[in-house]
Amino acid sequence: MSDKSWRDLIAVNELEKDWVTRVEAGKRTIAVYDTPSGIYASLALCTHNGADLCDGYFDDHVIECPLHQGAFDIRDGKPVAPPATQALQVLEVRVRDGMVQLRI
Image 1: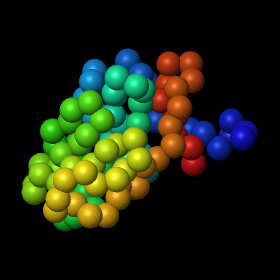
Image 2: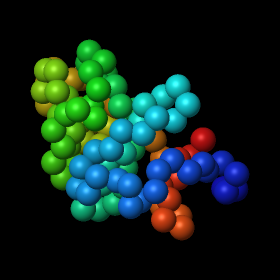
Image 3: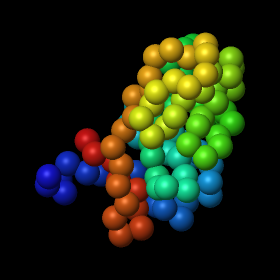
Image 4: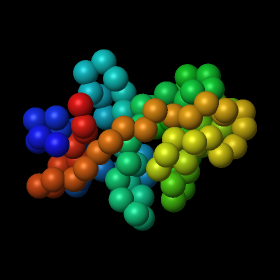
C-alpha cells in the first residue's frame, strides 16, 4: 500500500498516556487510544446514542460511554456491554516517525 494513502493524525508524544485522546480530522472527531498493545482509533461517537466517547472511561482495551455506560472493545469495535449493540467504526492507524497516521 502506498504511503500516499496515509495521513498524519497526531504526534505520539501528544497522546494521553494509557488513555483516549480526541483528535479533530476534517469534519470527523476521532478517538485515539493508547493501550498496552498499541495505538487504536475509532470514530468518537457512541453508536448507541451519539455521546462523545472521548469523555468516557477507558481501561486497557475497553471504552465506556459516558452517557449510558455501553462499552466497546476498541481493537475491533465490538460492543461488550449493553445498551450498546452496534459496533464502533474502527479506523486503521499506524505509527511512523513519531506520528500516528490514519489510513485514508
